[in-house]
Figure 1 (cartoon, rainbow, N blue to C red):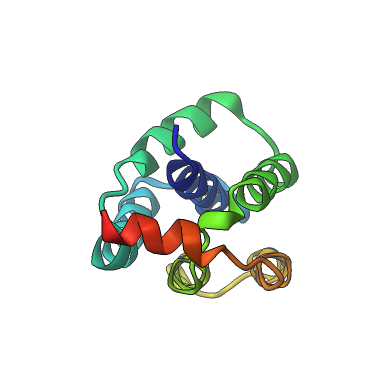
Figure 2 (cartoon, rainbow, N blue to C red):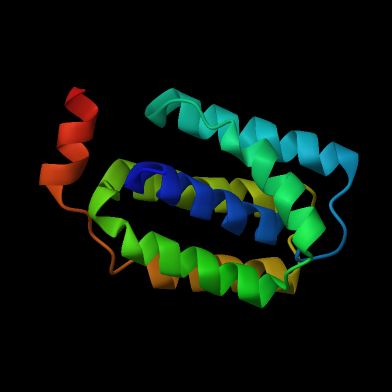
Length: 136
């Protein structure tokens, strides 16, 4: 898996974590999740079919939200050299839209969203890496 794919995979796990933080992910929520991720990343960053795979794996693993969050942020930090400002904003937008997908936004969703924004804020990619990817 490339660094950029690892970033997307980790983001998919964070999005899954957000979607299920307030309970079991229902069929309608799953479809809305795919639509949100696809719309945001297809417009700016290409295909994101990995989101379906993430849901299948995560549902079988039954990892806690905290474990999922910590693992995903570790991957994002590890591969942050590819984290362009646009991609970073896309990730924040995805998390916001998933939190707001089924009102009301719960305190757990608010907490994880604020934590994500705080944790991703100091990360700055290296233009040598992410601009090179955009030229390909």
